[in-house]
Image (cartoon, rainbow, N blue to C red; front, side):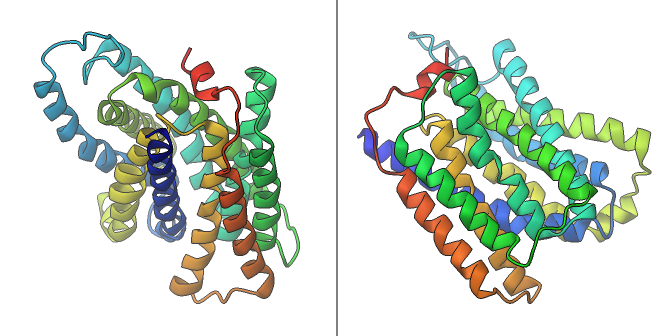
Amino acid sequence: MQSTTRLKGNLMIIAATIIWGAGMSAQSAGMGYVSPLTFNAARFFIGGTMALFPALYFLRQQKVQPQDNSVPRAISSKTIFAGLICGLVLCLAINLQQFGIVFTTVANASFITSLYVIMVPIVCLVVFKQKAPIFVWMGVLVAIAGMYFLSFSDGININIGDILIFLCAMAFTAQILVISHFSPKHNVLALACVQFYTVFAVSLILAFIFETPSMADLVAAAPYVLYTGVLSSGVAYILQMKAQKTTEPMVAAVLFSFESVVATVTGWFVLNQVLTPAQMLGCALIFVAILVAQIPAKTKNIQKELAR
């Protein structure tokens, strides 16, 4: 039963990475029509609205607090607080990514963002004193090698966009950890709803301060806003929250590296960017990393530590 639950969680994470990987091209294309903060405000308003109605339904169904007091009601002060924390961390990460995409390539952005593959185990080791299973570390190293071949096989050229994306990777490391902490304790749809509306509200306020939001620009960018709003935000982040109820953050980080593969393959089909032999090798290495990270080990469950 436990292995089945674990497999379901891992499959949900892989599904989320497929959506995010394909969405990287949509995020990049959307910058030709609308500014980054405005783009993110629009997409997370859509994502929050998608999560709102199911959350309200569960609120109506859940009339009383569960007897074991394990999960609060669909909407509670604790859930709102947790959603605000998750939303602020995600807002920082996603806006750093969106600004970075303006100045760098999709391939570079997908690789550097995925550096949380190594950051998450390091943070867990340093902060939570938790040693990762040897197979997770092996998966991390293979994934890093795969992402290098996938994105930087023709050389490394660092610019301001790459620096912003690196800061984004650090923020996504924190996001994975706070989701691992809060998602087991709260209704996922309610938590996602508060998180999305937090990103929307903060991004919108900043957009009116630093940008000039235009409805005409949003209409022009509608296909990209809708994809990232409905799928990248409304579906993928909910899958992440649901999955990280049972998937340890270190394993989740390795699984998230699959986003680089999808981003590159999407660029191949959508943008006619043919994969080089080195990039094909990178894709194969990341597949191997994902499989290696799934090998079970008899270690203390990090999820329990984060849930404290």
